[in-house]
Length: 286
Image: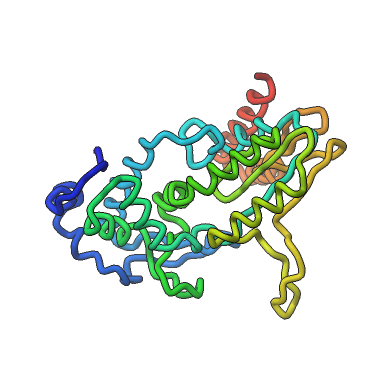
C-alpha cells in the first residue's frame, strides 16, 4: 500500500473500511491495561482497531531504516546491535525513560502529515488509530501505547530527525551510535563526556529524559540508566555481554531461564533459548 500524497477520505475508507471515521479520539475502552512481568502495557481490546494497526504496520515496515537502527528493523536484533560495538574500548549505554508515553499525538500527526504528505483529515485519522489517552502519564495529549505493533515504529520515525542528528554528532567524534528501540549505545576508541552531555541535552529539548534514580520520597538523586564501560570491563549491551576479548555471551538471566525450562520439561522454551544462544555464537564467529 502506497501512502504518500494521499488526500482523499475515500482512500482511507477503502483501505481501512468505513468504520475508520468512527474511532473516537478519546476512547480508552479500545485498550485494556495488563501487567507483563514488571512492565505495564496495554493490549488492543477491539479487533477492528487491531486490524487497522496491522495495515499501518505494513506501510511502516516498508520504510528504509538507517544503518544505526537495530530495532525495529528487519533482519536485525539485540545481538546485531551488540556486535557492532564488540571491539570498542570505550562504551556508553543510555536508556530513554518512558519513551512511548512521551511520543505525543502532535508528533505522530506531524509524522503522518509531513513525511507522507497526507491531508489533515487522513493524518488525524491515522493518529487516532495509533495513539491513546494515557491518563497515568500526566499527559494532556494522547500518546503511543506500550504494547501495540505500531508503537515501536512510530516512536522511531517520529524522532528520526533527532536520532539522525545524534548519529552525525557521533560520527564527527569518530564514535559509533546504535539504537535499539529506546536503548542508545555509543562506543569508540574514546567517547568524550561532552558528547554524552550533548546527547542528553538534545533528548531533553525534544521532550525526552534518561532514566533517573529516586529516593524514598520520589526525589531525583541521579541517573540510573546511563552506564560507562572501560576497556578493562565486560560490557552489557541490549541483553548481551561483550567480554574484554570481544567474545559475546548471553546475560546470566538467559542461562537461568534455560536451566529452569529444562527442569520443568518445557521443550519449546528450551529450543527457543538454545536457538538464541546459537545466534550469539554465530555472530561471534563471523
